[in-house]
Image 1 (spheres, rainbow, N blue to C red):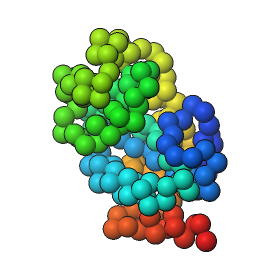
Image 2 (cartoon, rainbow, N blue to C red):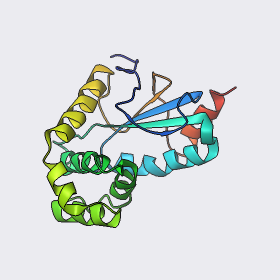
Image 3 (tube, helix red, strand yellow):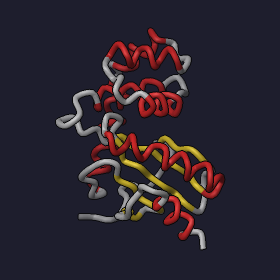
Length: 175
């Protein structure tokens, strides 16, 4: 199993925070995964605490066999990205993990301010499916076998992300 992120973070990734930050945290996540849902506030806390010292990148890793709505939710995030609202949809999906069927995805789109007709069209677009597939394949090449999976500065993070441990680890990398 590889411990290296493949490929490295680039302009194709969904990213928050300062480009060139000393810490780059990449999450491979599944919007229907309860563990990813639990990790969501830990990531938000790390972003809040570390500010411009942290760049956060999200890559889709829908585990469709275990989570029947995960693929469609990932496509919804990519459809929102077409209207410049990836992060708003990302947050809505994690904050409403038990509401991921098609009708509910359209409601989330409306709530985050998307043109819903455009969203529904983009949901079917090949570009979104290609992005989700590319993210998933990069996870496989990087050794991801479950979610959430984290990489810090290109290296697989095997530690606990709960109870503030991810934040503590990130802070230790700044010293």
